[in-house]
Length: 161
Figure 1 (cartoon, rainbow, N blue to C red):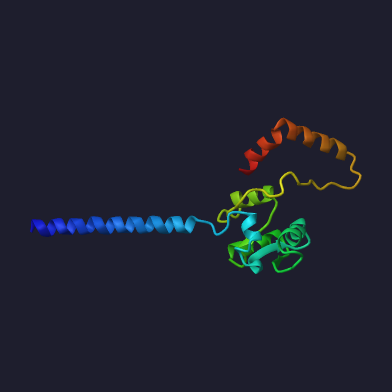
Figure 2 (figure 1 turned 30 degrees about the horizontal axis):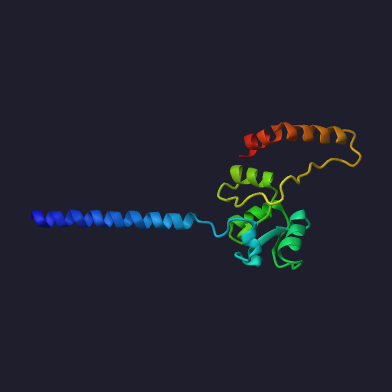
């Protein structure tokens, strides 16, 4: 009886150990991303028809110029809502978006989406204002002073990360 109880406990420990290792391996495998950044997209790790691009935007121009050599082989999207819905519904695997907008959307609205890679076109962003706006020059000067003092990075960390 003692030998049977010992074998039973040994089997129980072995099964528990196997289950824990299997769970750990599956968790690690699931958490690894297929791609790690823009270079993986350029190298074709994702099928081009699974890359969603918002048509009529600078992202489309970037894709055509830098990735597909002017070939429109992407999944065309008409709005940002369609972009995120297509990601969530697995119609597309990847999309490009402005870093600030993407960080806000993935942190606050589409929490099951993930940002991958580094910003690949840093420093280029815009604020839309009317043409010949009276305060345009003042806005430029103030944004530049915020950037030079580091306050712009602090605001970005506070509100988007």
